[in-house]
Length: 309
Image (cartoon, rainbow, N blue to C red; front, side, top):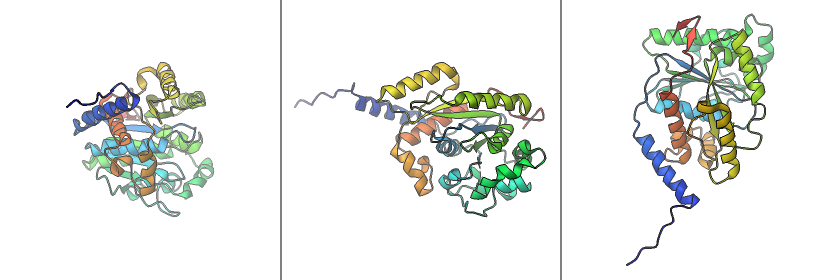
């Protein structure tokens, strides 16, 4: 009996083959290496809809699922990161607003993620929407998150529970909340969607990062670019990916996050795609991206006042 010949050169066959290869690479990594000191990432892009929150929660979940201690700071008044991580964030819920405006210690505000034991969250509520205005009149308004975070990280380290990664989810703007994130951060992760106008506005973001580095935080560096909403079947995605890689070089992760219904569905169930559908292409891609981040040495060592954490 003869079997029909399978054409493995078709786009569908290539996609299936890539999925199998990715699943094998991800499954072969059970634990990721701990960084020598806490790495603090700012996930920023003033364009909306590029996958900032999705990237924040899923990279965090990927790192936490491989044995690393991760803190997510939800700095967006919409609170979408808190939603995806199943953290209460209704109006009046204590969170990042109290840390920034009232000076409340983070250990009173950070909450454990119920689905991932190694992951904790500083939630955001709609109260944060007024923080931009209230911060204007406060002393050292740009450094309030940094001071609160450094104190919390020091407490965790002294208690023998050092945080390995901090991911700060920024709002789609370049206001005081984002400036606070950049002063607190040491590395910037920029998600770029594989769509037309992908690089539009990035020049302003990079200029703002340069300004923060010059005047407020000399340790801040753009270290990681992640391509999102990638569709291997289209020339547009391939063209945008080539343009981004030629512009940013080795800062661009090899892994691109595909367009995925599962990624979009997961937040409606208050989950990351890694817990919602672990075998999906979206989950595997975020796990692989997390592995790339963990295995790459940071461009600049995270420090506070010149001292390593």
